[in-house]
View 1 (cartoon, rainbow over the protein chains, first blue to last red):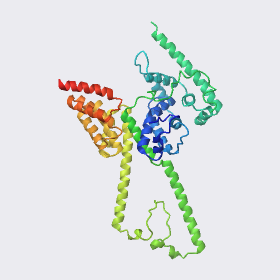
View 2: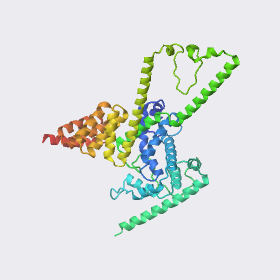
View 3: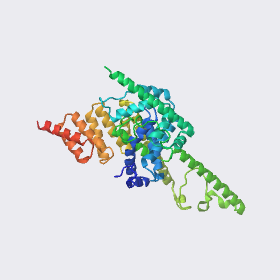
Length: 192
Length: 266
């Protein structure tokens, strides 16, 4: 079965079936997309509590949008944009920043031993993102993670390209600073 | 796309993990909860959004008003006698523009011959359809609420709502998902393997090849293990392996089968 995100392979027959209303094919596609959808949402928003509600909204948007999907790019890239739009729209509606900041700061990062696994590494990365203002965080994720161009990010975020460049610079600087501080504190903790 | 990740050359790669299907950073989600999310998205996604419906009604209403005005102008222009356009004349009656959905019948035939009892039956069936739709919607909403409670670790409340869905709408998709979800909670949180078994088995009966069949069969194995019924557990594991040979739990279940068989023979 071709993967949803593959460019070189022939188009996934499930996509055409889903576009013609095959519920089973659509369910299979959603099931495959769901982990990526949830992860992207968590990268975009602070805290875990809204992830599944936003994922639900995003999946509904994907279901409604799939008849209009043209197999010109990867389905995952198309879905990423829908998810980003949904998450950013949700964030604008639900500005409960303080609550999320508290939750995020209190959220423990699971440690599974000396060599952290993928999950732990990603939770650490997202904990650093949680320290960034929403606007900078969104620009960073859209540009570096989904691979949108700066003009595209500008459209998604409703800001000028110059503003987006500025947000990216600030966000990168802060991330480096946070990583450096985290590294320092780990070394201090580990010192005998 | 020329500016794609080119102008910002600071080294960010090490600080942002790639977006892929690896676990994290979103918290783990059980197979039951995943299936519920997908079912709800399929259900909600396939219905017309309220906004579009409203837009459709506005356009429909506008078209109806335009049509009515055009008709009246046309009638005045050709000077049709008033009696000919009386709405009581059946086949010859003028089109009546109302906000009600149009019922397409052959003019002057079915509409005239329909008896009062038929009309009452129609009305009753329409009410029954509406009631069914309303039930289905509420089961759907209940499932969302139950999943939310479960996420917030309010397990007793979640279980109660899952059971309510099973009672209210046993044959629906929501009822199916609720059965498996309730089975999981009864087993893991309430330590009631017998009640959990009933839920898992009834879920399998309603949809033997359903999206949660693997979860339900695993649940049965776990419930029998909790009851310390080794022989039945071994049999359930064999059934699980026969139905889900490509399951990620296969290796684990094969080990369990060996252990359960050994204990049975001892």
